[in-house]
Length: 121
Image (cartoon, helix red, strand yellow):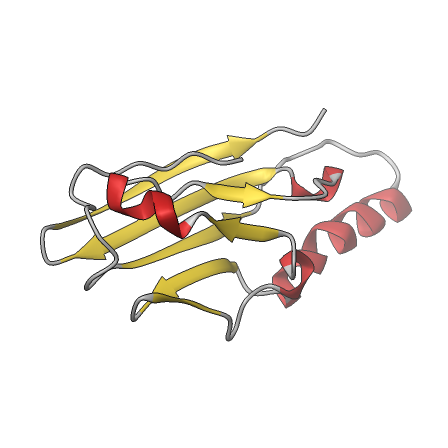
């Protein structure tokens, strides 16, 4: 799970929040041009998928325009939202899930964002 907590969140009323994936950019010095093309191609793969992996607004989860690689694997316990917890649960974790994740929330009482790195071992 990826924890995310905000003190200004006390209900789902007027609350909007999202979880996004931000790919980890790594630089490698490579002698072999063929390997470099393969490596770059592998990283560019994620540019075809939206960053958005979870969205909540209008008192419910929104499923449009989400990254299909996370379909059926991510959820937030809506009963914990009134306590300020927007923790993202991720099932069937894969090595390809390793990345930076950003939780953003806004309501009439405030706005904020949290960033964290998921390391898969």
